[in-house]
Length: 164
Image: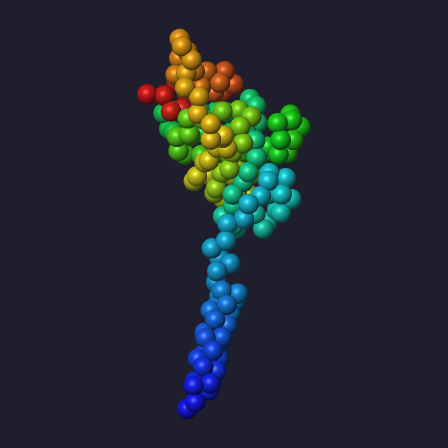
């Protein structure tokens, strides 16, 4: 076998191997592992399709919708398309302690499932924030962030999430 024919055979084998891998990705069950990213209005408009998939729901925490039950570590709130009062929103229930920066009007992404009762059950809660850190000013309480949550939340206890 000449070196040219051997190189052609190696190239053909590599192309067949790459094609088989691409075919597996395209036609295999990889679609079962996809996570869709939707806004509240997209989630509502997709109807039955939304009930079977794992979804990342992104939006803004609607003002006045936070309900925190520390005894059961249950957090209920609404994720809306925007900060406006009439924006489409979805009721979210999370069974984990929220991040310290969680508050009204902050951008969030929750991952979980949507059921036919209209409740989005979250198993992961992430907040959007800047990467800038500002140390507390002289005389300022380091835990002042709790005030923003406590002011707008209807809580089962007086302690906001994340407090010691």
